Structures are given as structure tokens and as C-alpha cells.
Image (tube, rainbow, N blue to C red):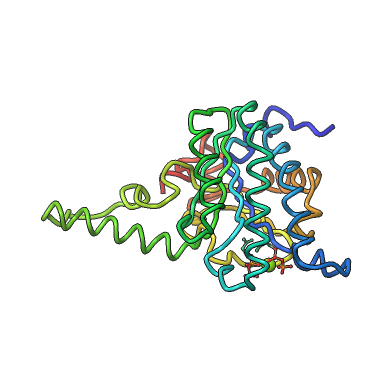
Length: 258
Ligand code: IPE
Ligand code: IPE
Ligand code: MG
């Protein structure tokens, strides 16, 4: 049983975002079709979500389907959407029991109707839950999100007829799909790839990044704990010096004030 000291517990991330990569490679190494990897990847979600809850990490975001994944073969995409539907139907009861609020980021209108429907219903049914927060990135791409944000902001300005003197980050960030969730403190990518693949590019400005060599279906509770342990060793400086950070009880700047 892993425990963190009281001091370490305070350092744990508030928001962990995960790029769940490597399902295809996991399946191929077993001589199985890619969808077998995706099925086992979905099975793995629960163990990581449970570990995050156990260690009081209140926000978890999972990159499940990117805008670029739309270019994958049709049978793989429809298989993924069926798995999403099964997952949400199966997990709804426990999300309600455990007070988990589901959110989604990404363009849901680009999903098949049946998938859109189950996502929207799950969001609606869990919207009053307050214990914990799970966000699924579905048909999500950071560049598209930013373009939509610019469009929405520009529209407001045009309607008001007056260009503001300046634009600060919190004002613009309010036009992003992540406006209700804090910036990620820790981004985990599985399967050994060192890239963000269009995931939360601006929100990741000061995120710590942890790359695990494990393929997503093998990334279990222990691997998640290892990532947390690695994270708490890091010194997050937010542009300041090490002395400034170690001599103040709290960092002078925090992730969400940038
Ligand atoms: C991640 O696994 C799942 C999705 C992107 C939907 P991949 O399907 O990308 O697996 P690899 O990278 O091909 O092994
Ligand atoms: C990133 O994985 C997207 C998700 C995990 C949903 P990809 O497998 O699509 O990323 P690339 O293509 O290797 O960069
Ligand atoms: Mg991949």
C-alpha cells in the first residue's frame, strides 16, 4: 500500500492529463487487431481513475480521440466510438455513486450521432456531481480549440463595437473549452513518445511532462503512482529562480495565474 507523507500529499498535482497512447502497438505485439488494444485500453481507464481518486487528484483529463484521429480507417473509428458508448453506459452508475462529474472537450458534433448522444447524456446526468472531475478529450485538437476561441472572442468585440485596450490571458482562456478546469499540472504520455500531438498546447505552458515507456493498456495503478512520485520531486519555477521558490512558503506565481 503506497502512501505519501503529509508534506508530499500537498505537492500532488490537482490536474493530471493523460495522452493514452500505444493501444495499437500493444495489440500488434500480441498478434491481435488494433481494436483489441483499444478494448484493453478502455478497461485500463478505471484503474487509473481509481488511483487518481485514491490520491486526491481532483481533475483527470483523458485524450481519447484527436481531430487528427479522424483520418484513421473507418472501421477503427467506429470501433472506438462503440467502445466509448460501452464505457459511458457501464460507468454511469459508478460515476453517480461516487459523485464524479463528466465533461468533454473537443468538437462533439464531429462524432457519430449515437456517440454524441451518450456523451451528452452522461455530461447532463453528472453535472451536479462535485467530488471529482473526469474530462474526456473527444475529437479534440488544440489548434481547433484556439481558432474557435479567437472566433468567439472576435465576435464579442465586433458586437460590442469597441476594441479593448488590451487582452490578458485569463480573459482569452475564458473562451477555451477548458475554461472550467484548471491547467494541467502533469501530462503523462504512455508508449514512449515525446510529443503532445495537438493536446492542450496552451494550457500545458507550465505543465510537467512524464513519458512512460509502457503502452496504455499496461499503464496500471503502480505506473500512475510512479508518475506522481516523479512529479513531486520536480521543482516548478514558473520562470522564477530556485531561491525564490525555496524561500517562499508558496510559489509567488501559480499555474493558473500565468
Ligand atoms: C492510442 O493508441 C489510442 C488512440 C489514439 C485513439 P494508438 O491507437 O495511437 O496506438 P499506437 O500509437 O498505434 O500504438
Ligand atoms: C494521440 O495519439 C491522440 C490520442 C491519444 C487520442 P496519436 O497516436 O494519435 O498521436 P501521434 O499520431 O502518434 O502523434
Ligand atoms: Mg498512437
